[in-house]
Image (cartoon, rainbow, N blue to C red; front, side, top):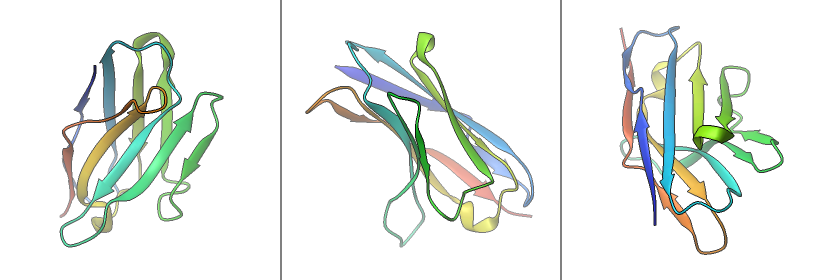
Length: 116
């Protein structure tokens, strides 16, 4: 069993910055990938960013150049640095982790609201 605990969400003004954190704990023997999804009201959940075991990253086109995903392997923690935030970034952000085939887990979600 793996638990993912998110933190860092909140209310920010357009153009502001926010950093999300997701700490994984439990029976972790390997980490294939970790990342972030988001879901806005009335919209489908979409992949925002991910980082795989090699360190390679992927980003949604809408966040490229503004968001950066990183990890601290020693802490089993993934971060999402969000800069130049826009109102359309408003969503619930969910951390996920893949720790082997059949070992996919989700965090509880954290609200990010970008509004003046």
